[in-house]
Amino acid sequence: MRDDPNEPPSDASVSPRNDPGAGGGPGAGGDSDTGTDDPGLADASATGDPYAWEADLYDVTTGGVSERDVPFYTTLAGDAGGPLLELACGTGRVLAPCAAAAGGAVGVDISAAMLRRARRRLAAAGLDDRVELRQGDMRAIRLDRRFPLVTIPFRSLFHLQADDDWMATLATVRAHLGPGGRFAGDVFVPDPEMMASRQDHHGFRGEVRHPDTGQRVAMWEHNSFDTVAQVATRRRVTELLDEDGLVLERRHRLLEVHFRYPNEVLRLLAAAGFTVGQVFGGFDGRPLDSGAEELIWIATAD
Image (tube, rainbow, N blue to C red; front, side, top):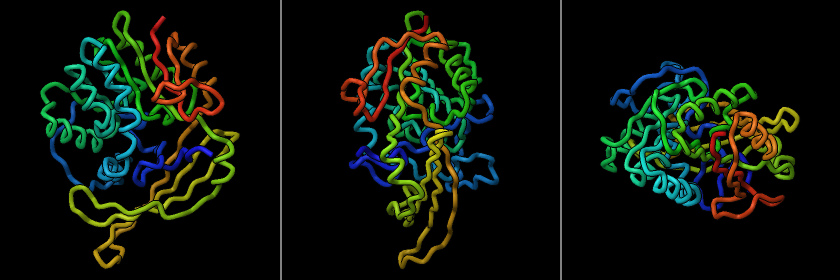
């Protein structure tokens, strides 16, 4: 049985493998450069940023994922011959190594908190002068630039609910692809057997240390799946603990993944005017077949 779309691979930490909070969501957002101030544990209700809390813990809960997808994207970035564009770049987990390989990049995300983390990562890697970060909605942002490579890694397209959202996002990709440019992305392949076995599962997901404060952070999750509407819902309860285990603060967050099956994804790519030149069932290049856990593609615009 494959990994739960709401759980990590065996080599990951506690974050869901297909975390609805991974990267930036598609919701309404501005189109502006981000500031450099970092408020730390930002209050999502005060900032209006639903990823404010997730951003602080994102990097410590996705550790094993980079071993899988980063080599794939950095190879494409190195072959691109120029700066790339990454939509839903999150904290720059994939963006930073790709920018190093390509010599530059632009990253777009809806979440200011995620972008603050990305800025810190880029500065630490000495890449801040080669990467531009923009806050914006991947369905609508226009940068008046074209790129040899546009990417949407780590299943961020499953933030999108309706076909219209997909088509708008794919139009953004087309608007930023240069002549002969390539579009690469990935999503997970839903596993009906797993969803049935994990329906309404509640459990302890693990404990990490906050990367800034060193505080203990415990996570609990409840997962449910609507296989008709194709929605995976995760309620995450995050607890800040003192060293004796006393709960100092508790937060709840409800996240949704609007999953699609491979034929649906490929249909939408075709409808948006893309030709999929290569498709894989894993980042190791395995074929897309009935046992595949991932759908990964490299496409060009017609």
